[in-house]
Length: 277
Ligand code: HPA
View 1 (cartoon, rainbow, N blue to C red):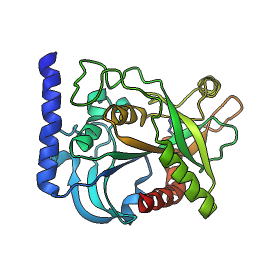
View 2 (view 1 turned 90 degrees about the vertical axis):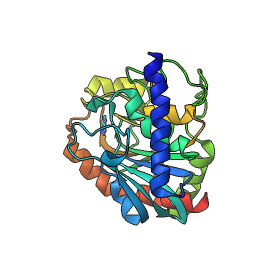
View 3 (view 1 turned 180 degrees about the vertical axis):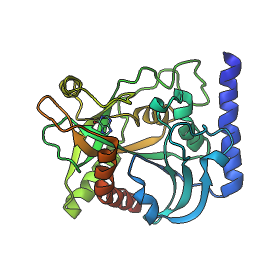
View 4 (view 1 turned 120 degrees about the vertical axis):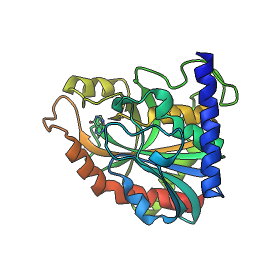
């Protein structure tokens, strides 16, 4: 067991060293792009792109058939790293694989992480197409990415999760929304393993326990980013609504369509935040 985990630390360092040698200068800010939210990349003045399948130790793409890319370039006047495509637990990756890119980011010296996702809304105020700043989350994944021996080099054994999403960055997003007349919701993101969408009773249950939106990603990466001492900003695009009285059936296609439609708002908020950082 110890041998396997020691290797994990070595793998992180090896990958970070390889990327550094390919890219040269490294940014301080990373952005993980969720389902249907890749448009942000079209606004990046790209300096360098790395396909996941060329990056040593990066998880090999399984279900999706196409692998993603790390994109380095300028957005909002800042040099950033964007992850186009993430690794989901429901695809069969284990939690160490799902969160490997975040470990590598930290090892490369990144200190700020933006995460985005498509999510189903339980909050009765929400509309399809709304953008929700994630103020907190509820972890309902069956496994925590920090399970197993802790490496003090990576972070503490029992990390606090009292401010998983930076309140300074949330305030900045609110200021930008106010100044630009953008409808920006706040809410708690419930992270589940999927790949099933929720039953009506499950959406209702997640609402009762304090959730505003539910999705199948983000929480593992945010736990690891917090463990590593990174500052996090999260945003959900509400692609469907769920609850006892809602009859619409969510499909992957609908989720993608709604995400594509709403993403300019998300892109605009993130770009304006980068300008202010
Ligand atoms: N549930 C879970 N994940 C999702 C949903 C949902 O309703 N919409 C987009 N991702």
